[in-house]
Image (cartoon, rainbow, N blue to C red; front, side, top):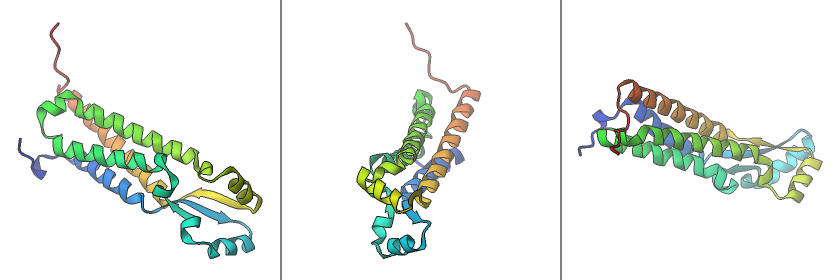
Length: 171
C-alpha cells in the first residue's frame, strides 16, 4: 500500500484541513463574558483573562471531543482514502457519521454554554448583568465541522455514483 499526497482527493484534503482547523480552534476563546453596564465591564477587565474568556479545554468534554474527532477522522480519510478496499468497506460512511457526531457534540456544547459555571456563579453573573457568549473558537470549530460534513456527503455521493458500494455478501 503506497501513500502519496497525489492519490488523495480534494474532498479528503478538505476533511483533513477541517480537522486541523477545528483542533486549532480549541485554543481560541470558546466562552466570553460580557457586561452591558460600564462598571461591571471594568470589573471584568480586572479579572484574569482565563476567567473572562475560556478555551475549549476549560469548558469540558463536549467542547473538545468534537474537534478532536474531526481531526482523527480527517487523518484516517487522508491516510486510508486511496485504498479501494477500505473505501468500499465504508470509509465514506464512517466519515459522514463521525462528522455528524462531532457537529452534534459541538451543538450540545453550545446549548449547554450557561452550564459551564456553577449555579451560584450563574446567578451572580446574571444579577450583575454579565452575559455568557460563544467565542471565536466555537464559530470556527462549527464552520470546520460543517465543511467536513459537506465534504463527507459529497464523497459518499461520489462513491455511490461510481458504483463503489459495499460488496454483496454471500448467504
